[in-house]
Length: 205
Length: 205
Image (cartoon, rainbow over all chains, first blue to last red):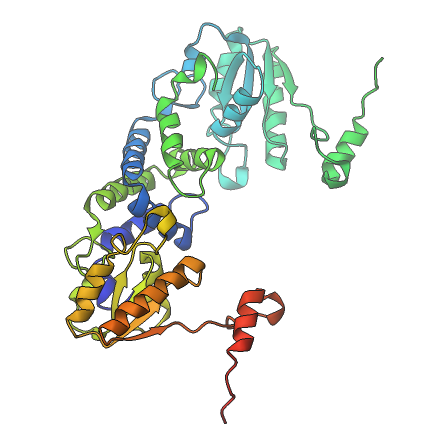
């Protein structure tokens, strides 16, 4: 910024700086966002300010599934119409939302808020696995659907989760891996293609 | 969203919806931003909420140059160390910021907050051109540097601005157009290349 002149723009500069907290937003995008709001969306900007404050101050974790919730227990966990014999374990709230939106799943969830990663100091305690184990011991859950990400750490977490389930006589299952629907074989990554080939299924009549 | 369960997430849903006011942010990006703030940046989220409210409520337009300002007159216009004989006209505050950051320009600015666009109902009144004309009549400005965008509407605006300047005995000038520095001819658009070729300059010793 200039030496004399641009000291005034401090509220604007503060806004641009504050916008950079958003993922994927650098200096240029932050400038564009700030100018857009000031020029055309002051009402929307104020609405966003209010929504941010409310969300940051009042959203906490569901005591039962660890997902984000405004209340002690989230609506899914509190619902009487979900199938409590099915428990789906995901890494993040975003994963849970994706499953909820894409599938007709009517069971319950458990959100790890991470994955086992010893190098980052993330072990079973950080993921609430003792809480999960206690829940399985309650005896209501029959199947633990492990929906961690198909990464090295996600697979290690899945392995650990399956052990917890088996030792509590709960049946563990995982999502099917393979060629994505609508994908072209040519563009599917090698690992996936190799796995899908090795796990090929018989075509039934 | 689900029928029973996801009604709780209303603060989260409100935040995701509110984030979509930002330019270039759709449903997926808004979700990612909301989860990022909730998981890792609650302090940053609150800071952003405060900065947004402050900026939306307190940033107005400088009475002299029409740029954004917290005060009646912005710091550039209020500064005693700028050259008041030079006045640079730009379309937007972002353009002004770009010039201020890239060049050593020490004159003053006038921000149109738009460009002539009769079809959108944007005429001389909306751009404050009467205010600009009165300022040129004050007699201090010697050169009007027209830095509108090289688009059809920007060029029309530039033409109009040059007329205003000449009729007040102010010398109008415009930014040089041509091949960008560091650009490769092969990738320069045709219009620019054609213009640069037609406006070629003699190489002086």
